[in-house]
Image 1 (cartoon, rainbow, N blue to C red):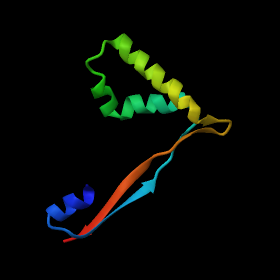
Image 2 (image 1 turned 90 degrees about the horizontal axis):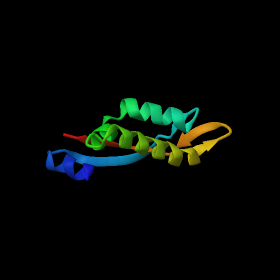
Image 3 (image 1 turned 180 degrees about the horizontal axis):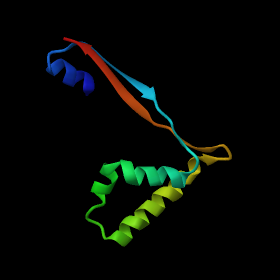
Image 4 (image 1 turned 60 degrees about the vertical axis):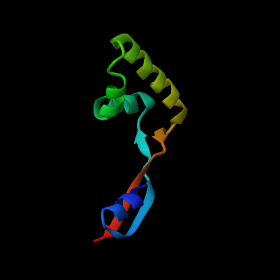
Length: 87
């Protein structure tokens, strides 16, 4: 999709690569704390929910994320798409 957007904008030689970006923290609880503060999209999706239900959702997210904890800390896989093209 990103390559198509580049082409439609008049760019040539569009290239998109997925770059691994693991998220590392000390614990799932820390990851959820950061997510609550930094990822506004999550909060926007839940804005219509009562506060008690939002808290319940975050607790469920944290519980699910615990599967990424190990004795060495918390690490969840992620990736970023990096695009480049010439004009």
